[in-house]
Image (cartoon, rainbow, N blue to C red; front, side, top):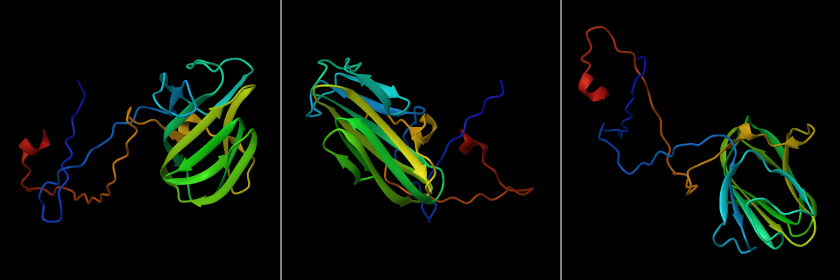
Length: 193
């Protein structure tokens, strides 16, 4: 039928299998949005996949959460920086917002308005958490980026990777070398299951 299976075996420098590694399945573009009926981020009332952080709810209610005011949203996942460079992260929110890249608080604004932070990032994947709190009145939250002083744009869904429901990222590093199989090599097909 044209399908194939690949089994990955991780070994140490002595060719002994390494145990305890967890590979996390990825679930598409966007961030896991946990919507809370309060500002304390206790138990979410709903969790959805949001493709981007680009919402203007006005004076209406925020979908996925009730009541309308004094609520919170926490988005978690991974962000892909396309390449090395200086990036500006920009938020526009009504009301409070916090942006955390890896474990570092990058942006914090305790009231409505714009906030920004500029930092140098290596191209690659980082953890991102965005926490938003809505008080009475209008509700909006947007997350932008720009690289090397280009105009800011909403961070697109393709820059985000949603993780499993626990949003845990395993800490491991790996390297591999692949050698071509030469004619006459002893290949054991039973190890390819």
